[in-house]
Figure 1 (cartoon, rainbow, N blue to C red):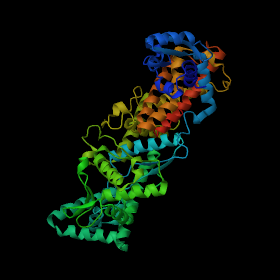
Figure 2 (figure 1 turned 135 degrees about the vertical axis):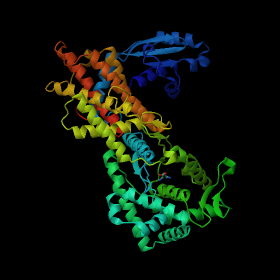
Figure 3 (figure 1 turned 120 degrees about the vertical axis):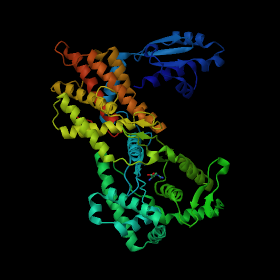
Figure 4 (figure 1 turned 90 degrees about the vertical axis):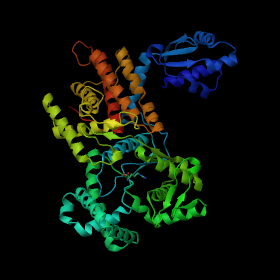
Length: 566
Ligand code: ARG
């Protein structure tokens, strides 16, 4: 039973207002004491030619309590509805039980395709903390959309094309050693790349050589292509190690190179539409009327660049997937780039360009180090992940907790702690990493939420043999049970809100509140204690069970795996 719908039905019957108007008007009161749902009578004032407080009084008199509604109060111009708590708890827990892991899911995305492009590191370069931010947000969004029934495609737009590969090939030919590279590919490739730049300062002719190599690569020359492929494969081995640790996977790894033969068409289209103008030898789309610098399409030497590849990629995605939404999870410093390409696409007349969305995020500072994605400083990501896992392990060891598989538990908590931190606040905010906060088992953190789940599971293990499947939930009514069950009921709404705003932090905040309410619940509503009668015990166990399922699902939407005990 949807209590809100029920109240809307009643109000419709009584006022004759359109259903949609009522549905839009009803709201959750700011304070639980004011009821579960409020209806502001202001929209009725005009029609009824009365002051809203008068209308509220009159309507309250006509609205009688029923199975679902305990009472209706008129306060000022508002009607405040109080749900029947027994009914609400029992209805929600039964429905949650019946839905199991599908609780909170919906079908709003049925038949619609959402592309989530995220992570997108650059090959032969370190996977930096900004890419991890993108990976955390993108992976969570992909899971959220799937949960809502969308057909989701996770795309990794690898940075694997551009003149820098000419430089890398030149560097490799001079100083590269496959044996050293295979031991530590990205570090070694980075080393020779840096060396190239140092040497090129002294010997500028190196730049010409690099340009030639890139030209060869663009022309499909076998040897250079072979080398490029080798760099890419080596880099992917490392990236995939990180993705495995995080439990992340992609449906496509089509990077920038994939679009290298699809750009002529884009250039032709732009030219045909009369959008290209010449500027200092380059071909650009002038966007000055939008107060933006021009979008460069062809450089003066005729080479295409990042923006051209992105436009070709968008067109390809449109044709391949006919998407309803094409999301780019990329740091805020690239906002202008996306505004430029989206505007260019709009000018071509691609109506679908309105469905392309840049989902940006802030900068990250690591503890003790002043590192930000903007400066592109190098942080070895695997080191950060491993450090988190190690720190978790020592916390568990010093707590003296007994866990069956400390490797697995430390890994899940350590990685969960990092993902949680990225998804804790609105994504556009900068993040300062602090181990103390991240691994605070009592604070707002992954370990805290995971502990809530493990605690619930341990209660359920102790209750083994008790059949609470037909529990009489009216036995569980209490203030704290009600708060908890209301949260359980609101799971689906939190997920929808996260998808609407492309903000996983709504799910994060949701699960944190749920665990808080759960802790309060089991502290004030003892469950397995001897003095608790059987019926009450069963009713409370049913609530614990439903709570565990929701915590697990919600954490899963953040990319976090639960552990059964910790
Ligand atoms: N490889 C780029 C970088 O590391 C991010 C790519 C973002 N995606 C895109 N479609 N431009 O900065």
